[in-house]
Amino acid sequence: MTSLRVLRPGVQSTVQGKPRHGLRHQGVPYSGAADALSLALANRLVGNPLAAPGIEMSLSGAAFLARSASALAVTGAASEVRLNGQLAGMHRVLELRSGDTLDIGPAMNGARSYLAIAGGIDVPDVLGGPSTYLPAGIGGLDGRALREGDELRCLHGTTGAPGETTPPEFRPRFSDVVTLRAVNGLEFGLLDEASRTELYGEAYTVSARNDRMGLALDGPGLHVRSEGRLDSTPVFPGTVQCPESGQLFLLGADCQTSGGYPRVAEVIRCDRFLIGQLRSGSRVRFLPRDPDTARADYLSVLAFWRGWLSDPETAI
Amino acid sequence: MRRDGVALKHVRYRVFQSADDRVAIELRDTAAGQALLPVLSRLPHCLDAVGGVGCVELRYDLAAVDGATFRGAVEQALAGLADVGLPPGRVHEVAVVYDAAAGPDLAAVCERLGLSRADFIERHTATAYTVAMLGFTPGFAYLDGLDPTLEVPRLATPRVRVPAGSVGLAGSRCGIYALSGPGGWQIVGRTDAELYRGGAGDPFLFRPGDRLRFVPAT
Image (cartoon, rainbow over the protein chains, first blue to last red):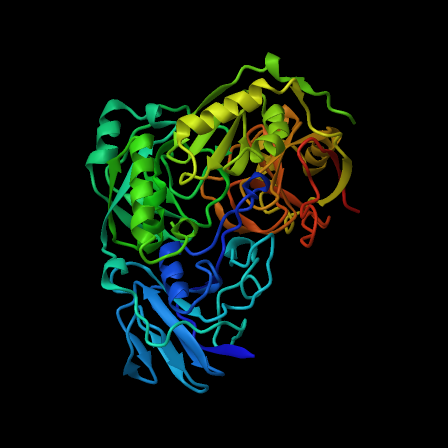
């Protein structure tokens, strides 16, 4: 039995894998990796299905002890990975022996790093998926973030090619200045004229109020012509809400399934993985797109990623 | 109690693009929308069918189909339906503890409404409620049927974590948390009923169209 012991859990590390698709009508959020592309790239290296359960680490990174020989890979926002104290590198297959330690350093650009292990983390499906959803305490390891001393059992896997690395052109470079393409949301028309221009013209700063559910954006306050709250209507990761306060709220992977604030924009599908790499202080601009152009964008992004990933639509 | 089907040809609806990979159906009738979800979720390339108040949203596989084609398929499916209705709803009796520990907002709600706790409980348990829809957090039930004299606004600052079983008020609705979660509903009590069962089959006790009554827990 392969297993990993948590030596240093970091600020928030959770098991994330396949999202819970198809249950939003019962209020069940998707969850899954906030940046599903980075999890897919890690899984690709160790020979797993792209959404196999791995570990998502926020900001501070985390450290693990291998309890048996296993192949691992780290992707995402970290800059430094150390194997038994020696620099080991991101985006490559790391062969660990029993007793080896792997330390993933803090995020430099971006917010989250991902660790995949050959076979994937062995956690039970809850509500049709393995991913951790902290607000309800379900999925992952007992529905909670990892703690020091936790033992993570892993399924038996076919090890990826030893020494394999992600080709440079397939390594996303995360930045703290991010442009997200977006189409107008259903309540875009509730914005006054000046706010419609500002939404796409101004840069916003991610506030300290941010987590896997969503991120409050500081910037020019927008004005909605609304009597207040609307009736509860469906929202999704990528929905940009504008409450009466005018402070935009961008929804993330764990977002609720319905909300009562005007939906002024929707980040397009091919840019949603970038939301998972936003952190306090990141600068965000929204670039207007129409739905047909957004589909063309998506198809070309998929075509590019097929050069490295077998089924990129499971990740983007 | 049997809920009669709704003749869809009598429900005005409109289908339009709501995001690059989503289509919205505006149809005013929330219950008709809920009844349509199983049909719409089986459309080719449909990944999610989610109801809201007076609307439904469908997320589709953007790699497989373009918006115009998917909207056409939705229109065709709706045109072919003679009537829609929710299956007969079940009836639940839900025992609620109404006190300060179970209902942290109970005292403030009573004060705002100018009611004694006993009067509040009497009014809250007097009416029959209908599950309008599930949504927001896993298994959260939006209930119609609140006594209009019990309407209160949402909390100015939402709570990060509300315990499972909590019964809350917001506007014209009452709601129940099946699992713990965040939210701005004013919490007036809590039930021990097993609202989330997990495992195989339907994980949640309530379904849209179910009817329920609250009784004070003894």
